[in-house]
Image 1 (cartoon, rainbow, N blue to C red):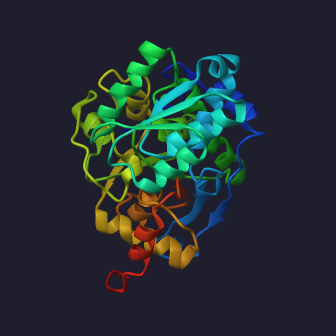
Image 2: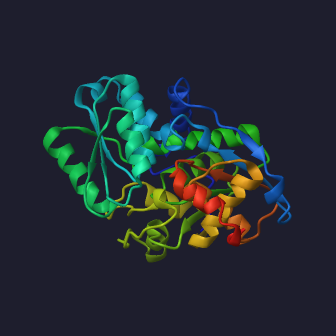
Length: 333
């Protein structure tokens, strides 16, 4: 896929991202960009890690959710908010809603790990477990929008959410102006399209690489098909990347097709290897979905990787029992 030099796409502009940055600045952390000697040693590229694991909720999702809730203001407080989530977005919405005193209902499937459900409940949100897939949970979310008039905070396909995630791109440009490639987890497309909008507005030659798991790669399969398609949601170490993109997708499908240059699929063993590598070599705790960018580098699957590259380590909300098992698996190290 080829990038674009335009500063807007899908009705979302660079100005929207800067407005989001000002709006959420009091509520989110500017996350660190750290050089990775261990990953840089693999090849000719100088690789850094953007550690969204250091957000208060442990993942990048806090940016988009906070932008939506803050922009909605009194309406969000009066109506309450609802979303569907594989975990991190729900936790972010619960956190943002709690800050402004709004009711929050989070719809999730049975595939969401217990630790993520409990973290949301601890923030005072109501969790509803519906069905065995993100798509089934989305039906309950829509019912609450239609019948209870709750405000929908979409996990990715919303201009305010996309602009919030795009603030990562602004930080990258400020911290590493000569960036050549950014490697980003690909799920519903909110993260990668927001970052790509910001980066390519500054320099359309910056390469954006989307990485997702082989199991249930909804956006990848949709781009291949030329339209949003349904995929079977399967258990994966990258559980936060699960779920469909919506057959009526309004923004992120077109943005992803326009702005993402390359796509990489990683296996479950490659994801586990990345989790281990980040812990033992970088002292970073990452969940599977947060580690896929590093998995692609370790597997040497990123094409034409050179110059200054950044891996977005997008989340660290992994079940610690599962994490301990992965990082102490001596046979795989």
